[in-house]
Image (cartoon, rainbow, N blue to C red; front, side, top):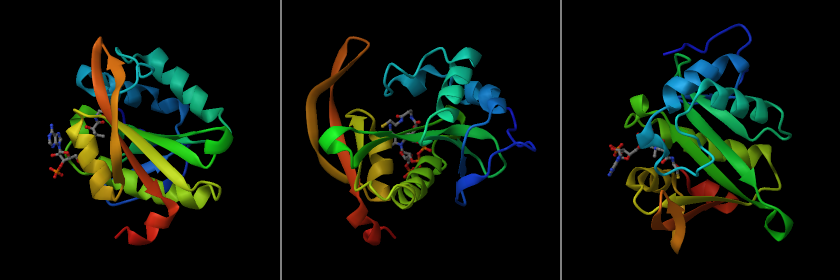
Length: 190
Ligand SMILES: CC(C)(COP(=O)(O)OP(=O)(O)OC[C@H]1O[C@@H](n2cnc3c(N)ncnc32)[C@H](O)[C@@H]1OP(=O)(O)O)[C@@H](O)C(=O)NCCC(=O)NCCS
């Protein structure tokens, strides 16, 4: 696995005992491929997350993120600087402009170590601080994605309901579970 530590490594926006979250650097591309190129990882992701996940996929995504304003997508790294995943926000528009969707993934080699839970919690806090207009973060999860629902509930996201037959991935129609975290919920996070 590629060690992403280098002189040009961007400063962390979030540091926890399990991970560092920071802006991507062009040199992260190989680490991103090593973490992302697993079929098990994409089954509950949107089709915009490609498989196979190639060096071109990684370079395209890193470039897109680095050129977005505001920057809303970041890499998740182990405390040692190994690329472990990604986390980011999608701002909504019009009357929903104060609601943004959150998305995240962790590479298969790093599953079950508490990285997603730690990253989601700290990043959600960071997002409300960084974007004062934000009042609600939403997450939508395939109903079969038990690990992600566990992560969201452990962090303190509220399960709001089921979006029946909302998604179709590889010809399979599935329900989605809707979760949210409000700025007002932050005081209840331990
Ligand atoms: C979902 C995902 C982010 C979780 O990452 P992670 O770093 O392994 O998460 P954590 O270690 O913080 O917690 C996961 C929990 O789910 C549990 N879990 C994993 N698979 C499970 C399953 N099939 N059934 C029940 N629990 C499961 C783990 O054991 C762990 O709980 P524990 O700490 O009590 O043992 C990761 O699996 C992933 O990236 N999956 C593919 C992409 C994805 O689904 N992204 C989210 C889209 S909404």
